[in-house]
Length: 440
Ligand code: EPZ
Image (cartoon, rainbow, N blue to C red; front, side, top):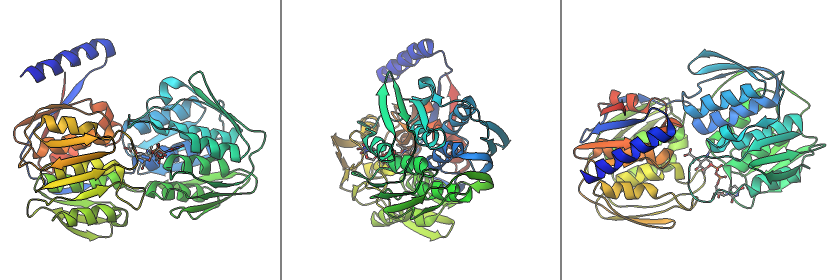
């Protein structure tokens, strides 16, 4: 009761301070999810492909765009830079980038999400100059961009960070061999973007291999680029004079959204068919779900996940692809919170990705988190409570926790969730969840 009161006070203060309509999700738990769900286009591919359109001196069509706020935000930014965007449907646009008039992307938009830093690579690639506000995004601890800068400098650019902006400039961009000191999705993508129109060949060594990197390379190659080896740890980009575009590209299904529903099937003791996914991208999650006693039947572009008995304990270490993805760690944490025995999660990518565990402990879980390690002592079940999403994937995990818990759960801070999940409550409702979004 006291907790709900405190939440209400906070909500109202931020309402008057923020001046925006506040929403929360109300979930009545103990509902085994049943039925079919279809996966949307991948957020982390879409937020790389949209800025990549700046490299095209022409028009392109993008299909299977997820209907999420990060995509809307990116389209707004592209239009301020001079692009013309036509929405053909909720998931399909044409982008005309023949007339780019600015190289400045203001801080007030770029700080709302991380992927805004891809504007540096694209504008540098096209205009040899970029001025982009420092990126924002999920608070997962320290998020340096030294490898991005290393790559841009190797191609011949100068980069300075001043007054809230990242400014990059180059007379010419010339291909180079770049060894990544850490496996970084963002730096791999940004260097790809900056080298597509550069003179000569660029080699990215120790590159990240995530599905969205392959999807970006396929998009750029469809538009006229010459990129080989995406998906391996060595990517070769032969610079071309121009990307003409004049083609259509469909974005890959979201690996992390599919994994989120796989965890929800087990945590809720349910039985779900997940359509429009690429099961190859889900191998590490399938293996972990089978290891804890869940059932998976994978078939090309769909899979069935179903519960038969209480999961057993397991240890997880998050790793770059094809290892277990860090973006599924919180959702899997909910499954392990009610598993039989004690599990350990090692978060090797981010310094601070266990904030959600204190919310789960408010729901009766027994989790001890310290730095990059958390110990989950499995409890019989979670109890509904008011909880707050601290970032995108933590938000998805709290929804799963609410669906599987006893009683009523209220989830706050939905703007985090809307950044990366399309109509999440509607998709869960179609699977039988008792979930509704209400305005405060
Ligand atoms: C991307 O972030 C994703 N974001 C993240 O997903 C995801 O968690 C992450 O990759 C890892 O898979 C997008 O694609 C928009 P990194 P990014 O560069 O690119 C260190 C979500 O929920 N590093 O691969 O920022 C860094 O500190 C989001 O969808 C450097 O040291 O991640 C981290 O420890 C959250 N220097 C590691 O590398 C650098 O210059 C991996 O970071 C860059 C990174």
